[in-house]
Amino acid sequence: MSFWQNLSERDRKVLGFGGIAVGIMLFWAFAWQPLVDARKDLATQVAAAENDYSWMLGAAERLKQLAPTGTANTFDRAGKSMLALADQAAKDATLANAIQRMEPASNARVNVWLERADFDQVAVWLEQMELRFGIRVESFQFDRNAQTGLVDGRLTLIDSVQ
Image (cartoon, rainbow, N blue to C red; front, side):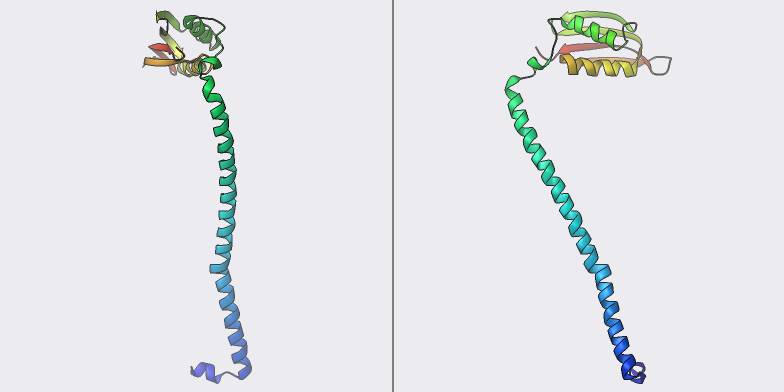
């Protein structure tokens, strides 16, 4: 207190206004500006969420339109049997040499034996079978081959359309 009283009137005014100015700047830097920035971020997030919601409403309407058609009409099989489709897709995926045996177990089930098949190509083949024809894997068993990336195994494909 004696420090303050020893100052001249002019110095006390300058220090008082300076202290108030520093207090205002600290309030602005540590309280006001972070709140303004957070509000801007929240407004951006709300706008993005509203866009996502609008897209979801449109997608839901599109799904409602597609629901009555079912999945059977989306696969173009050109009248081919499941065995023929699996064989053709394997040739397209360059797996023809790896397939040792392919036999129908029923109208909706095919057993396939592979030897020295590139695992990545097998994965692509199985994905294409499901996407293009609705044929999916019911069961599989793969063993690692001596060469890296190659597998031996057996799998059963089923027709998800029937």
